[in-house]
Length: 452
Image (cartoon, rainbow, N blue to C red; front, side, top):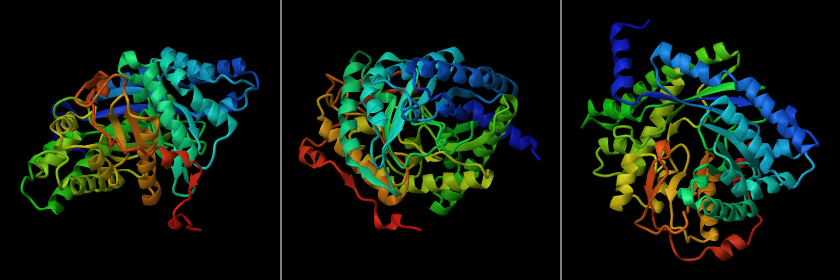
């Protein structure tokens, strides 16, 4: 039973500590939209998305108003489009992105994810067509997000796809240069991508999912930061227990919203993703949580250990609160979206190598990091390969979302605005990785992938 103290505490979390439902995401299967005629397939895609999600935004707004819980985003994820478009007789996949974009605009959501391909063991003709269309697709649409899975623990790393993605990211940045490379903020490269992630840009509706489903992403860095202030100077086991209890309360709120949205939309409830997803707002930072544990500035020695504790405690608290915790669930470290990370990067304490080390213990990977615009495609591919290797060997999801904005150099700042924030351009190693990337082929799966 809820008591007055619980209610007042939750009100304080929402009112003063930036607690919110970051997103309600409806996943929609588009497999029934496959058609040899690409124009007809696009009509089916638009019709199905708008029919299933027509009440998504209104329902989210109604719940927000009635429960007093902020719901920041309403989003849609769809079946990886390479699987749908592969049935059509066409070389041009951009119209499929256009159909997704029109549907998102009609439904009123802020993003639609699933312009995606799963190529961890090899590329079909449809996969390659979609990947090569990404720069034009993201430049010509407003709401579409794209993700490519290039590796997995069971399959290894598809280095041909890794090499191709380096070139695609560079071209996407060039196509959207006037917006500081905004297209790259909507493009993520995964290893071990999950099928029920509600967060963008990596959300897609997995082939193992139901016809449609509601997934909710909850966020509360400010709540955790506030809770840790009360245990300043206490041992780490106390810190871990405090984070765990806080995550429990946040997850319970997320499950309440998810179940209510599921009921009102007559759509099965999938998962609650408890991820500490920061924003550029003061007091809503994962970096500041790590500093509250005793670090002078995020990125100094001890940062990886602090992040490991945080990520583990968040997951444990979430699992205690709900049997439906899924997605990524943990701590995100997107540089441009976290004011504490931005400050640490500007101070020079947080560098690309340290961020890579931190990704070994956090929820995703190298996220929203600005690099010089003249960074070679092979260097970007090598960064992707490093991150995919971390995910493959450690049996976890990792990802790369880099922003090589044309004309920008170390010390410059790129501006994305809104939740995407801004980021200082960070240096990369200038020594070449071109011969390494040119080898192609596949890095084999690790021995511990043989679990049968």
